[in-house]
Length: 264
View 1 (cartoon, rainbow, N blue to C red):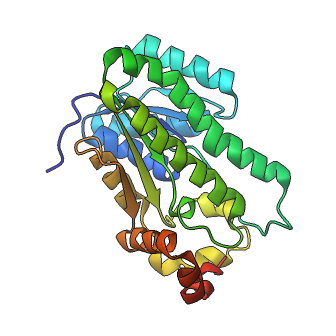
View 2 (spheres, one colour):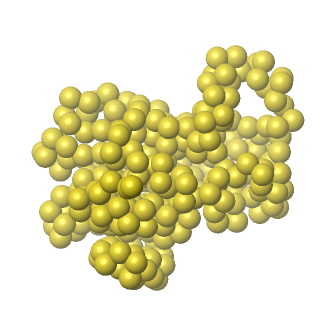
């Protein structure tokens, strides 16, 4: 039986689709109050209506441009004014574009850094003072196995997720004595619309279709962290083990798994 989140206020960025949408539904089904943040207001309103119909929980929604840092601050101030406090922040907003460095647009790389990294940092900066005041809270970053184990055509995306993991690790140590938990979730490929933009040719999605995870399962494992916080989880487990092996002996892993790395 799923434990009850006792009306915890759970702010989720990038909540309009994919993993963000599933985490919002999972939160509500467990008794929490998901606060929905994303750019597409119509999608947020539709999800809020679905959540209320399925769970009788009202999920407030706020359109936000995570790359507009003043907008991020204003939205979080509005949430705290209306909700009183924020118990959990799930930094999920992000995107990827797969391309060889020689062909990659510097504008695309800059946008990935701004959304995936700086936008998440801005959200943390907005929520952290309240959590420090209350001496409690939980911040979850949706990273990626790509942030631990880079592959060809993912240089910009891998760099952004590597930065996310590094920031989370430092933040965890900074707030460890203030009652605030920090977790990182590093998934491999998930069956979502992420690949519509990341992999326009469709070759990578096709090549990894057999190992793609369902967003519902990743969402459930992420929300489980609210009951039993962990430093990080890597999904699927075997990819986490491969990432550890890569960090220990990168040359050997690149030699042994080179063809797998080039599936993009």
